[in-house]
Figure 1 (cartoon, rainbow, N blue to C red):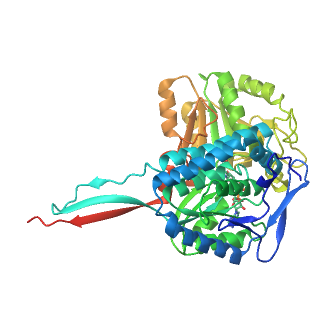
Figure 2: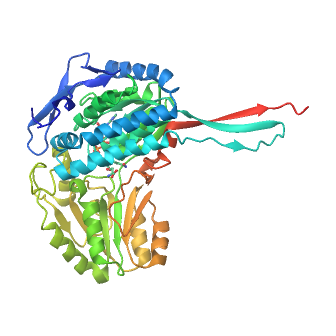
Figure 3: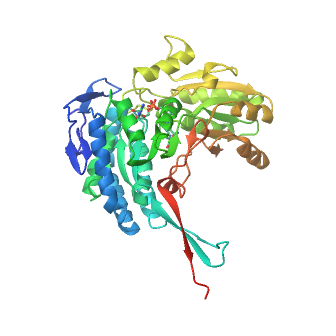
Length: 470
Ligand SMILES: NC(=O)c1ccc[n+]([C@@H]2O[C@H](COP(=O)([O-])OP(=O)(O)OC[C@H]3O[C@@H](n4cnc5c(N)ncnc54)[C@H](O)[C@@H]3O)[C@@H](O)[C@H]2O)c1
Ligand SMILES: N[C@@H](CC=O)C(=O)O
């Protein structure tokens, strides 16, 4: 086996539908490579439209009974799934490192982060509330109740192959929804391992279905976004694919949450603690070798501290060790595949690629207008607070933004002025199951995690009751 696991049955190479492990009806499979070594990790099924529709029908049937389970019962299922993840942290991390390339320590962090969404939503499941409202008509009584939206199509990316699944499946199951989960083709085995643990946790057949596809992805995606039984699509990925999926979903007007690309500004003011800001930048910019949607992408530094700050950043990045995620000294792994390498290369020019620090960037450069999704730190100098805000907001997308300052009034001013869904003030790591994660502008809409995350999988039903006034 390409991955050394204590529990070898966690490496599943079939899809999980209706509580069973199944191949594609065509028998086709696709191969998944370890990005560090290019060796095959394993192969998994190339699902097509018929396979996908069969999974959707299964989820639709399961919804009829699962929606009626008590919130406490759903809570216990999620808690059991969480416990099993925590009991298998090392194996799950090894699967992530093999298919994604991130260092093992980062993979362990991801597994715990991923599990935390199951824990969080196990606690939210019994806390779904409606309202009582004073009706305009004195002879009527008005309440709202919350209901699960129905079968959910969950489409997740490869950069957090466990956490991006649990951040969607946790609230969906807590709300009483059933799911068809399209695992990322680059890194499908984490999702399949999670399905194995969902099975062991006793989650009823048909509630969690995990499917895989590579070449058939557009057709499978079309099926998930147009099938009338799917009532909700939650997608994390790029803005162009998000736009395509939204268009497809319009044919049946599905409820949507889209977590799309970012282009995060990272502002260092002249009154910042530079060492804190360097730690924040390293956490934000270079996490998973720059491949997170909330990575700092445009680093704006006040001219008076510009040189000193860059020097401090250089001192840290020179200690990085790039290598195989299993390497003991590795701090940063490879990019996911050749196509991912192409993007930083396009931003830099050919034949140049490594952990890279670029000074004196100017607005309008490609690196300023597009998300790099690689380990390239691009620095811009600014002179005034307003100039920094204007530069930061000069983007079509608005996911995360960061700034560093010790001035409390400036902290409120800038936090309110940034056109983003999430702000880190004097901190570079903002991911937290308790925090609402999501963007504005073309970074999408909807929130994941937090008390808001479950609303994305619920509908509000109003019940007006007429009473006899006598
Ligand atoms: N906002 C967030 O929370 C968040 C999180 C992670 C990644 N991202 C964004 O994702 C991008 C990087 O990931 P990527 O390059 O893999 O994105 P991508 O949009 O190409 O793919 C994301 C997922 O969607 C699937 N997909 C692609 N085309 C599809 C289609 N036509 N139908 C159905 N599924 C389809 C892919 O197989 C993959 O699983 C970056 O832009 C990043 O910012 C955003
Ligand atoms: N990095 C995000 C996910 C997007 O890439 C997170 O921390 O949840």
